[in-house]
Length: 80
Image (cartoon, rainbow, N blue to C red; front, side):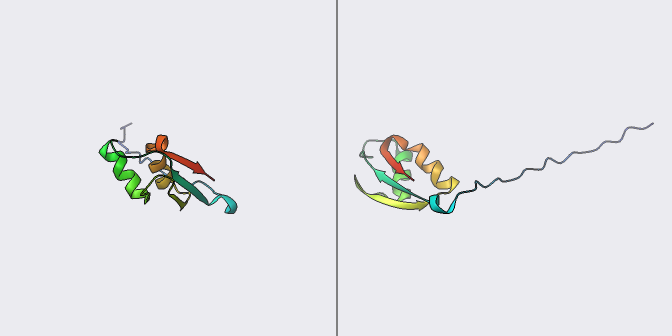
């Protein structure tokens, strides 16, 4: 019997986290200065829209925002 060369396609799925309706926003507060930090960390803080210490913003709880928060978590306070 002849062997058949078959290519197997890997199926990747993007899993979205299910967020309940009462926890769909998070509050992020800048608690430490970002001056003197790594340039990428400064850009992340600016990307979040935080401009000064004790500045708070609310965001939708998405994986993109969570990734930005995790990168500079030592500068932030996060509340659900």
